[in-house]
Length: 147
Image (cartoon, one colour):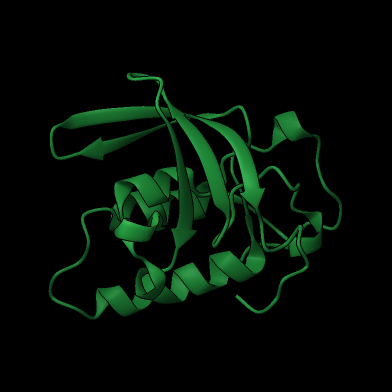
């Protein structure tokens, strides 16, 4: 497990931040996937993101960071279209309701991003690029432990 950070570093010093609780749950999810014969193709990207991320106590996560179960407003850089998506664990994903699984390239790209950041994700017909315009709901900022 990574060393716990006691104070929040300056924003420009954090490339990607995840809560310790999210990182631990996602690590267990990835370990469980290793026991299956077919792993999601996003497995390496998510593992790399967790390895490189700064793991922070949930009280230290800024409210504009995308954490698990956050609802985010994004703008497509190609079309200018605004979309709202919620980052979900696989069991809570529902694309029809805008709940995107962390095990998709879109979900992996969202994790740990801050308002103003750009993200890219691979889709069946190429690459999509978005800018994070707002975090409409973040469990940590809402002190919501029930998700």
